[in-house]
Length: 72
Image (cartoon, rainbow, N blue to C red; front, side, top):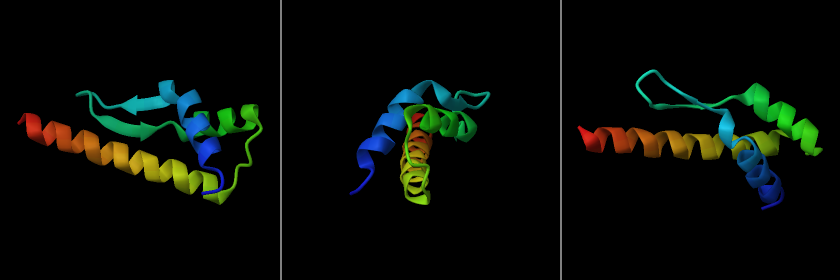
């Protein structure tokens, strides 16, 4: 898929921009920080790029919720 490499590179660059809740649960990415990184890297800030980022965020959130549920 076109732009997958950019999405991966952006998420790798923004790995420290994950927001964690008070009990250690995944909340999501800091989208303002990711947008700034996308500009710094010269990525095309298209809706398609952000759909890919959102898809990854959704999967991570689901996996983290599953892990928390399994620990109970």
